[in-house]
Amino acid sequence: MPELPEVEVTRRLLAPNLVGRRIESVRCGPPSYFFLTPPRRLATALTGREIRALERRGKYLLMALDDERSVLLHLGMTGQLFMAGAVSPRLMTLANHAEAGAPGPDRHTHLELEFADGPPGLRFRDVRKFGKVRLLAPGQGDARLDKLGPDALSADGELLFEASRQRSVPVKTLLLDQGVLAGVGNIYADEALFMSHIRPTRGARRVTRKEYLLLAENVQRVLRRSIETGGSSISDFIAPDGKDGQFQNERQVYAREGEACGVCRTSIVRIVIGQRSSHYCPSCQR
DNA sequence: ACCGCACCCTGAGCGC
DNA sequence: TGCGCTCAGGGTGCGG
Image (cartoon, rainbow, N blue to C red; front, side):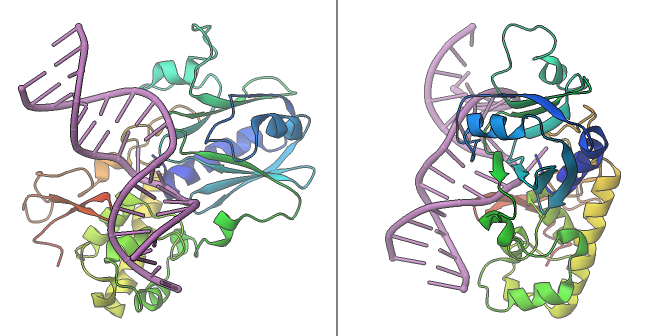
């Protein structure tokens, strides 16, 4: 689900619901791949704390607490952060399952926070458990964050060009490298390359400076547009208020294999690059 | 330093 | 209806 736009939409809708509120109780699911900090330790640390801020770094969220500790969150592929009771038109049972007195708690909801001032609480659900939660001590960094390149919302073509010179990978792979540019994922990489008329298979070194300048502009453009429309709700993403994003309706190539290119009517092609599906127009992108 | 690949996990959709 | 297969927007860790 979540690339930069979905994470940013999540942050913007969540922040007003969280900042300034005090955590009264915490419920964690069983220890799993999902918990980088053991759930019991996490629950103890969070209980009684007030949330001071919610920030985004690339596809990560950082929740700052009033004791100078913070919580690092990542949504993985299927993570959903939402306020309890949110009604999702597509995934109705999902958001309400735990609250609606359904038979037993939702086995995919791994973290639940209740607040001292009453409902709604916060829910973190993640079917595939590729998401992550980690408690950070005061001043403690995180190797994952340290490795991130500049944020993709301020993508810089000169930097992309520089980073591309010693790389032998396809340009698509370069765009997905979070150490080069933080926040671009599979959908927006394909879309930005289409907008820039660059074929995703082309070697990163074969892309010119001028093309990287255009590509950086289009990365910014497509990310901003997606944020405006609430992100892409293709399979799992719902916003914290339960609403669907709308950007999937504006996709030009992603998951449009066999459909006509909106510019030239050529059939969109799907191939695999670096174990990820990639989509492009063989006529518009060279 | 870089690259390709296996792997982490669960569910949906498809062909038979 | 059921089975087996493929696919899915994420990232890490390994060996070459």
